[in-house]
Length: 334
Length: 272
Image: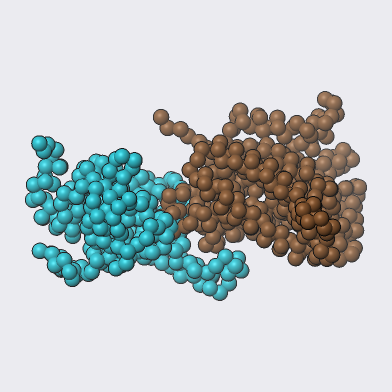
């Protein structure tokens, strides 16, 4: 086999793994959109907020330290502990659940039954608000995510090297696959499997699907919409945390992290806004597509195709299959 | 004649018990329009109670008041001997009042079995953590609920479409699935909003049979809205007749049929 083939294979694999990261973000959008019809523009900021909260809690940073110091004239910054990643994740999840409750209680409770555009505008407001709160709480400096996945500190020593060696020697060709990408793929697979099991086999999952399908019918079988919406925002918050940690581990936790939401848009247009499998397949197609396009055609047209490929692909889909690959076809009866 | 204090025995020998639900002087307004004007009636244990009336009489509004979708401006709702505070529809459902809708509200994306299983949601007590672990109580509950769902599916003769997505079913069967979903929650009061609307004769006969069977087999108290006078007269034990938001008749089908005001309302005689 010629080296170009292996190189193309390597590009494909890396593209697929980048796609997993896109899919993670898109997943959060789909969850909320399905259950409440809200297109949550703040999903990216939620990922940022979750990642910053995680790092802050882990490093024992005092929330709102700058604000407290400015008002009280103190000089406090840290509690002086360093928490285990697992504990920090659990605490961050608690924060995300509180956020979900607050969003429902103070924003969307008052907007039930409003036009989609109004709900959408509310999420834009939420995005800016949350970004400001994140800044106030944890400061604006770029932070490094120190979960096990970044440096392999949680894994027994040597596994990283073993993975490197195994992938490197595959087919006797110098493969390069980022360990972080492998971890992300595994975590994403577990996350999706857990979500599917949750929605298929548990009471809350069934209620969630019921609400996503028909509000009135859900009420009539005793489902509280408010409770389910808080639950859905919590789950989306958890997904945002996972996405935020993955992206944060890759490129540092910084405010540009909230822009990953933009990358999720073409994924959603491909996969359909209401389909969880769609989000995953859409993410994979975009991830792989943009890498392969760059590899085969990019050099011929001057490179840097990754910046626009996803959006152009989404545009083509909008013209020929507006409901996406897996979305529900909208039929208007006259 | 009815014995209003202790219940009564129907012509076909069924014993009707005490009052399950009592509406006292209900008035419901939408802006300046009075959809229901000062209506009182009761529903007794084990009976089939019909609410009839011409289009726009306020029948569906009344059903929506009972099931908590609408809240009356005046009047009281008494349920099982207690005055009911204003409640959300899901709270009403949890109290054991199940309903169907005039324009079918099923979960279109789910299979028939899944739809019926959602009817058991009010009976699942295990919390989210137990559900996540999926052992012990959560698992037992699921098995038990599944058995109940299968029994109702058999009862309503929809076994052969158990796994079919609801969106693919014809209208008549959808109505039956909706009945199954309401019934599986073992309601103490079952509300049916025009269960026979839009059906052909054969489907109507089937639905009539099922309603009678449900009442007979499970002793379910049923309140239903219907357009078709003939159907109502065959099915129900007592009938409330509404016209322009007012109650113009209440009694056995025989009494109602001979009530001049009811005859006027249905034949459209004008009152000067």
